[in-house]
Image (tube, rainbow, N blue to C red):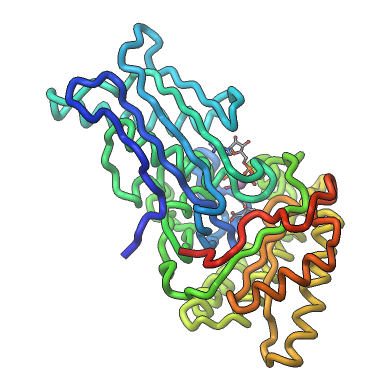
Length: 376
Ligand code: ADP
Ligand code: DP6
Ligand code: CO
């Protein structure tokens, strides 16, 4: 029922006595329409509210990660090194914990079977690249950490099912648990103290609403000043509006958007999506000190889409033709139906003749992703 959209591209060794254990995988981003923002447990990576996202076509936006197990290394047990987009990165506490958890699973496997190679504590060399801006509000942590968990699972030959990899990916970045599944994916917040019911669940597959598309407008490819982890921490500590959101708003919205998706009701889907993006950014503003993820280009995109929807509704009788949503960054993700993509592209091109990238004024045709058929 749930098809993992991640691709395992290569796993070695191909011969029994090979000394290199390596796997390469790629993973898609997912962009939430009901936003996750806030943790009730940092240690267990449990959210303060449920969320729901669409997994985008990884032929457009993807993380690609190679994990190599160095079997011949002497000493250096449990060592790991990570290169992200060609630069050596310090391993975060969360990635270290994720790797420790996955090594422990390998220890159990090796204890049960004396014939399999001893890989559990060998050094890991990890190299990952994103083909889209990293840490710019386009969910690089979602694709990146989903890809890491998936590739380590393959390199250490753990053979875990997608649900288990999703729970591990969550330990690296909350939003990553949704990238293990295609189509429309909920992350139910759960209520158990151990987090065992805080899991990602496919709401509808990628074929359910085949003309749904995503269009991404890059307003700035630069790294955000406030990473999501730190931003949501301050929000949980300081924002009264967040408490209202998680108690009185999100539960109804989750139910309503699942219903809209089931019925392929674009008007309802679009209104909930835009309202939730707006409220997420209102919560950021209610954080103290405030967090500003949107910039003036984002505001212009919101005005443009609002105007366009109003004008279009006179001729097509639909309330909304396009829905905007913004993650923790200034870049817009537009959800729309395939038949409207060409016109919306023309509209954006004419409205931003110098490109939507305010910093570089890049040419307008340099969008990320575009959608022949964006979801698959
Ligand atoms: P985004 O909005 O892009 O998700 P975040 O602040 O949530 O931004 O997370 C960005 C961080 O996620 C990066 O600084 C890096 O630590 C991690 N990350 C992003 N891509 C990858 C990747 N491909 N592999 C490993 N970690 C990654
Ligand atoms: C605005 O998953 O990046 O993209 O769990 O601390 O890694 P950590 O945060 P992250 O937060 C994502 C926030 C969001 C909304 C969403 O994806 O639901
Ligand atoms: Co993120």
